[in-house]
Length: 465
Image (cartoon, rainbow, N blue to C red; front, top):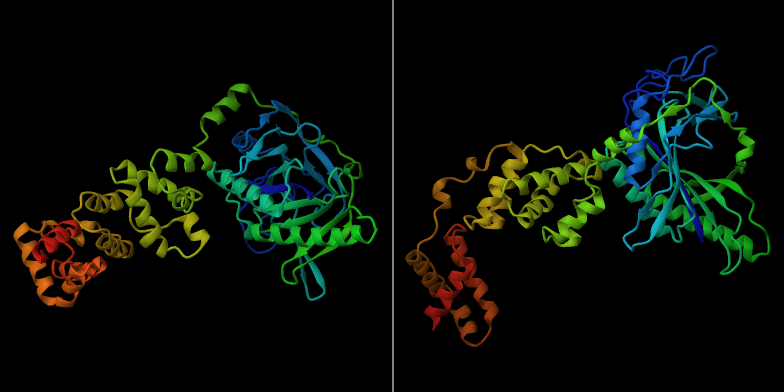
C-alpha cells in the first residue's frame, strides 16, 4: 500500500479569510455570511493578515520552509457549495514547502506543501432535497499535503493524530474533527513489490481518526479484489460511510489541469520578511513530542502515564504549574490521572480542562504527600472534595490531622493489632508474610491513616519476636 494524506484544518481566526464574517461554529443556516463569502457580483476579497501568520506558525511547527513571496490563485470548479464557481487557493507558490512529521517509530512522513485557501459551504441532504448552508464558506483553511510515505492504516492514523496535537498545541486550530475543523482526504494505491505504484483513489472528508483506519482497510480490500480479478483500478473520488461501513465511488477523479488554475486578480502578491518568520518561530511553544521526552527523561515519569496527559495543552499547562510550585511530578501526575480525570468523561472535557481548583491548590495538597504528612489515598479523597467545592486543602485537613503519631502510640496500636488477630500472628510465625497486611489494616484504621507503614511493620515483627 502507498498512501498520502491531504489534511484540511480550519484556522482559529475570529473572522473569515476574505471578509469580516464570524467563523463561529454553528448558528442558523446562512446567517454567518455576506456578499463577499457568497460571491455576489461586485464584491471584492481582502486577505486576513492573521491567516498568513497562523499558516506560517503551522508550517514552522512541522519543520517547513516558508516561502517569503507568495500569492493566491483561482481554482475553478462548479458545485453548489461554491457560489462564485471558483475557490481562492494557492497553486504554484504555496506559503510553506517541505517539512515532516516524525512517527514514534522514528519514521518521517514528509510534507510536500502547506497552502491557505477558503472553505466551501455545506450541503445538507434531507427528505429527497439538498439544502446549502454558506456559513462555512470563506472560513480560512490550511491544506497540509503529505508525500506518499505512509505504508499502513496505523501509520496514517498516527500521522493525523500527531498533526492534530501539533496544531492544537501551537494554537492555530482546535482541530475538532467532529465539527469539521480538521478533515482528511486519504489517497490510497496498491502495487506488488518491485512494480510501479498503482492507480490511486482519494477517500474524501474523513472526520475521525478511527474512520481513517477503517476507510483505508476497506479501500485496500476493494482495490485488491479488482487487481486480483485482472481488472484495473480507476482513479476516483471515494466516500466512506461509517453508518453502513462501506466505501463507494462519488465520481471519477479530476486532474489539476481540470481546475484551470490562474493567479487571483483581486488579491495582490504578498511578502513575509525573514524577520517576521523568525519572530513567529521564537513564539512557538514546546511541541508535544518534546514535552513527552522532557516528562520522561527529565522528570522521570513512566512513559505510558505521561502519554495520558501530554496531548492535552491545558492539562500539561496545569501539570507544569503544579510542579513549578514545588510538588513532585509523579504525585501530581497520579492525582491528575486519578481524581481529576474521574471528573472529565470525554476527550473534549480533557482538552477544555475546566476544573474548580488551581495548580497552586493541587501543589499545596501534593506537598503534604511528598512530606509524608498524609497518605496518597487520603490525599485523593481530599482532592475529590476540593474538585467539587473549589476550596483549599486547609478546609479539609487541619493542623491536628497533620500531627504525626508518636512512637509510643504506634507501639500501642501494633500490640492491639497483634491481640486482635491471633491467626494472622500464627501465619506470620509460620512464614506466611502476607498475613501482616491484616495488621496494617488494623493500625491504619485506628490511627486514622497517620501511621507510617514501614515503622509499623518493624514494630509488629519486633513484638511478635
